[in-house]
Length: 550
Ligand SMILES: Cc1ncc(C[n+]2csc(CCOP(=O)(O)OP(=O)(O)O)c2C)c(N)n1
Ligand SMILES: [Mg+2]
Image (cartoon, rainbow, N blue to C red; front, side, top):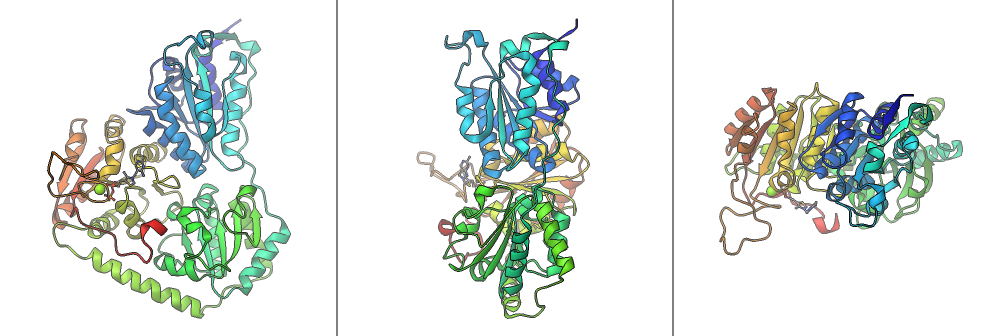
């Protein structure tokens, strides 16, 4: 009777469950798992640090709806991988963290890299398990994959002791599991649909907020139909950008503060009222705002403020319900109202201020002309990854998205260091498209070594480093005996790194250098870095609310 080893069983089960990508770093005891994954047809990308690999796995989950695996060695490798599990937990993205572990018959003996791995993963995952028998590995893989994508998505952890990886089992004794179906798409209660539309009909100052949950649920067609039919003003959350194209005439993103502050009825589609949306509370929202909350997770309804209507279900299914109810009883928000005028005026004033900053071509450059140049040169279907503090915040305003799931950023967890892993994930999922990864110099530094990974796999990524010499801004020079905490090396030549790996680097300090470097870089097929030195004192346009209250 033929038998199979544990590594092959894990890899075959992953493939069977629709896992197409594995990211990681090999070493004891997971080398055979990586090789088996390649044999089974899973695309393996070897990273330089498990943090980036784990971030990449979460991004693939978000982009495709099926988790990727992050493969880590025991102990420190697995601990690094928790970074991505935590990021996936915060963003509600599916992923699988797979940690190798010492032989189970050495437990408690101080084995090589022995650590309480299942316990360490537990707070950040929906499911954490150490499989008990080789024959049951397919059961655990299926359970982990299904748990990660059903209900509110999140990470799952599997702990694989060496004796399970190298152990063998008779094929006849293996409990194979069929591919788990894509997640169910629950509908909301019909009475809640009717009540939601009634509230919107009665609203004087309605607003729709589109979150990344709508993007994840692939609800873009339904949300666009809904906006086009109802003519309601909308704005996206940072990663909800593109579900409805940013250049849609009903977008009030440029009047964000005023829209949030004065709306009387808010339809929230797949977004949480957490810090990003100022908790839905005063002073950023009206205290009598009526909330219609659409979420896949029933427990989310009413977080921070009570919901007038809870639409518990899948964003695609529930938006389709709203659209059919509207088809039966057509309604749209009046074309001319005081609210529309107010939002249009506030938006126009903001846009004018931003445009003035974008066209300031003085050297040293500020953020706005740099990001505007990227916008003007980016292909319309480019995938945008953005991280940093000012760099990311300003990119949200200046860099538009035209399609769903085309922006990845520091997200709900505000994690710096995700950018390179995300860019690699985006390139792995969409090898035919350009990935533009806009990084603050600090953000880049967290995982800059992954440019070697991008080069090794010949990925179509252009990294743009918006270099202001530090965290939120550094100095032109400093006293080496007392370096301020936010300062990094002035005008560091990060672009030179990539040349050591076969990529192309550019350094720009003027608008002309930036324009020509970017043009050349975007035309390359190898990974490129455009390192743009900007004014270390450059800042964001003054905000109505400062960052402490945002
Ligand atoms: C993992 C992690 N460590 C530290 C921070 C704190 N932090 C917030 S933004 C930031 C970097 C901002 O600098 P940069 O990327 O250069 O962007 P800039 O604002 O200078 O454009 C840091 C370190 C964080 N958010 N995440
Ligand atoms: Mg910086």
